Image 1 (cartoon, rainbow, N blue to C red):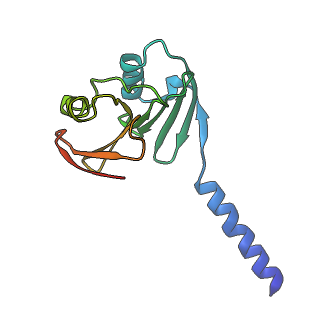
Image 2: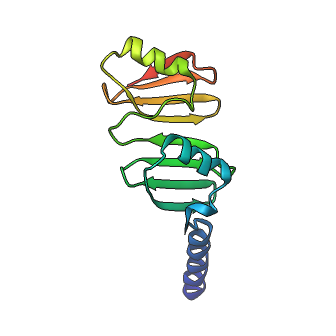
Length: 142
């Protein structure tokens, strides 16, 4: 019985590892939407890694930027690692709000999920701002 239990445990563990499969791919394997996004907002910054996961792609750039894309190639999260996120792919209202209320801050991370934006600033770091899908401020957490 002990042997059976160990074999069963091993099969369950192997199944868990197989279902979490990640695959490193090259940029031409990214959906066209993702490549267009990279060429538009991060032109000239070298892609150093692309990892395909079950729910999308993670892309790492040479400058430390990390971008998560959904399987269809639309962006989900952009983290520019202590640099300002380029503008133009999210509502301008968000940029305007940050410039008005946090005059010395800039957006260094932005995520779009469930019809709302979560925005991380360089200062203050412990505050996340939330906006609806139209870019209207809805609250913050700290």
